[in-house]
Length: 59
Image (cartoon, rainbow, N blue to C red; front, top):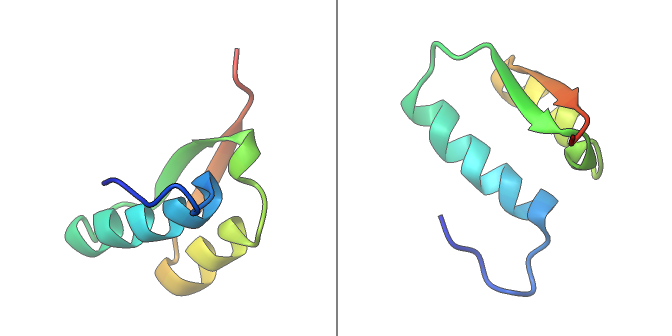
């Protein structure tokens, strides 16, 4: 998925996750880089899709 340059990575993650989770409804946990723990993404994924996001540090 490609987003316009004026869309932040986190904002783009909403669209990418929604698309993937709509297609793969059995997913319950997704690993994301810690930087995505902004703009309410974790709460949105849990509330909207009942999917937990595991934030990991980039190595």
